[in-house]
Amino acid sequence: MERVLITGGAGFLGSHLCDLFINRDFDVVCMDNLITGNMDNIAHLMGNPRFEFVHHDVTNFVYVEGNVDYILHFASPASPLDYLELPIQTLKVGSLGTHKVLGLAKKKKARLLIASTSEVYGDPLIHPQQEDYWGNVNPVGPRGVYDEAKRFAEAMTMAYHRYHGVETRIIRIFNTYGPRMRLNDGRALPAFAGQALTGKDITVFGDGSQTRSFCFVSDLVDGIYRLLMSDEADPVNIGNPAEITITQFAEEVIRLTESKSKIINMPLPEDDPKVRQPDITRARSILGWEPKVKLEDGLKETLAYFAQCIKNEAKSASKGD
Image (tube, rainbow, N blue to C red; front, side, top):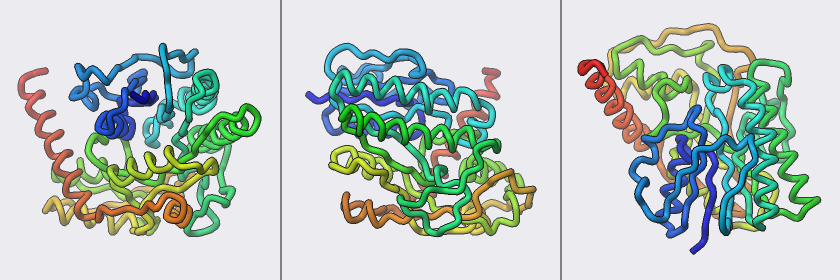
């Protein structure tokens, strides 16, 4: 039985990865310090003999008893709201945390995949973004704590790959959405959904002409698994290249929720990227991967999840919990 360690395993993406590996008959060790993760995301796996949860901060020494065949390093605050509130923790998990899991991979002779991000491209000067683009990042701006943590993590990973011969994989994740996102995590979809479902005005930053590309979580985890099992050590973009403006995205949320919400514009945050679209040529050619879930279908499933979250919160509030 092969065994996988998933750091950040109680988070949005990490918990979906736990499901994928359990469904593929792996033994799964889920490690999380729960500063942004949530035990509710993995509650359905507790009690499964092939699943183990470890409450631990990966910026400290990481050790796992027994064999470890694969490590997926997904521990990190990932939304702007989180990493602006937790700047030092974000930098530490990208640097010290990455160093610790690379050391474990070296000791266990495990293959390690790190979760990098489209944010390594910063506010890009080329469009769409391909993996050989070095990016346009402000290292001292408020978003730099996340951008530079991930850029350092990539550099450290490649150093261990070249110097120590550790088997490594680097995924650059573009905007992803789906059930288990937090309603209050500050990203566009949870914010728009929460506002639309409760009849509030939808807040769009800037004039709404900035673009994003949204990938449904099931497509993303399929791409992650394919990359992990491939022989590709260089970074690979995984995301949906279907580009949409933020205003169009807000309008789609309003349509699907049948909300009466209106769109209001607020000042654009500092260093907010104007465009974001992955070039997935490498993923297509090397991994045979491309997204399958249409935006409308993914949004319907995700909005139903958010609607249930809002109902549950209202029920808890009425009971005085």
